[in-house]
Image (cartoon, rainbow, N blue to C red; front, side):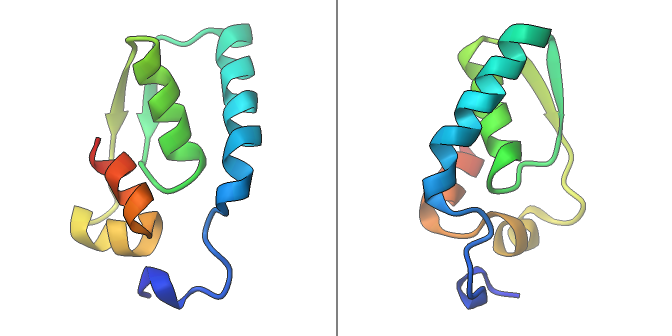
Length: 85
């Protein structure tokens, strides 16, 4: 499925701030040493960004080739830039 064909965005931009606050609070409360997961739009990328801000590391495992993953799970150019970073 092409990212532009979704009637509702996979992760709406207006949810980013609230989710980032939750992720930050959880990392502060529980701590973190290393992250592990995919790098999809939304929680995955926000968690990765928060780990990087803290000079922590992560392992990203994609379920299929990056080009296809970007189309199906990342979406628009802003999220793709975050994915590539």
